[in-house]
Image (cartoon, rainbow, N blue to C red):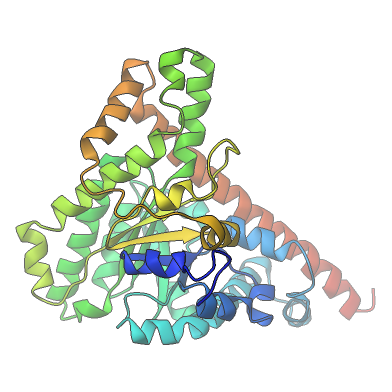
Length: 380
C-alpha cells in the first residue's frame, strides 16, 4: 500500500515489528460511515479500545444516536439501561467489523474493549458482576471487558478470567501494580484451567498509560525549574513503559507461566495507552516510535495513527535492552525529590476520577435526551 510517505508503509513495518495497532476511539458515526472498516483495511488497525471519555465525546455531538434514543424513550427505558444498550450496540458492531482480523489471528487481535462502570472501581463484587453483564450483553467472542487495575479490581480480574472472560486491564501506571496485574492474570488462568476452560480462547492485555506520566512528571519538573530537572523532561513516561516491558519479559519466562503456556495459554500483552502527545514540544509520534517491541499493542487515536502513516520513522526495537537507561531516569527523578510512588498514586486516583466524571457526563447527556424525546413522544 502507498501512504503519504510514498512506497513506504510505516504502519505495516510497525505491525511486522510485533506491535498490534489498535484504534483508541469508537462512535456510531465512525461505524455507520464505514470509517472503522477503512482504517482496518488501509491503516492496519487490528483492534479497538473505548472508555467513558470516548463515549462521552461520541454521544454529545451529532445525531447518530437519535433513532435509538427515540426508541428507548418511547419504551420508557431508564438512563442506566439506555447507556448500556447504546454502548454495547457500538461494541457489537465494532466486533463484527473486526471479526475477520480476529479469525485470521486465531483470536489474538480483532479485539474490541468496553469498560465496566468506572464508579465501581473500588467494589470487587460489583465490578465482577458488571463485567459478566457486559460480556453477556455484547455476546461476541472478540470482546474484551476492561477492568481498572485498582486494588479492588485485581480480584475481579482473576475471577473473570477464571470464568473464561477475556479482560483488558486498564489504568496501569505503577510497575509494582503491573506485577500484581500479572499475578492476577496467571491466577485467573490457573482457575480457568482447574475449571476445565480452554485457555487458548482467553485473551488479555495490560494497558499501561503513557503520556499522562509525562504530563504529571513534567509539571513537577517545571515547578523545580533547574537545569538538572529540565534535562529529564519528557523522559519519564517512556522509561516507565520500558521497565514494564522488562517485567513482562521476566514474568513470562517463569516456570509458573511455562506451565500455563503448556496448557495453551497465551501471554498477556503489554498495551501502550494514552499515546497521543499532550505537549506540543514533543513529536506527535513519540509514544509510538519510542515503544516498539514484539508482543505489544499500541492503541492510538486516529490523529496519531495518521501521523505515523505520514511521517513516522521507526528505529527498530526501541525497548529491549534499554532498561538500565530507563532506571537511571527514574532514579534521577527521585534524586530531584520527584517521588515515583507519589506520581503513580496521583495518576491512578486521577484516572479513576476522570473516567467516573466522563461516565456521569454520559448519563447526564442520555438522561436529558431521553427526557426531551419522551416529552415529544407524549405530545408535551
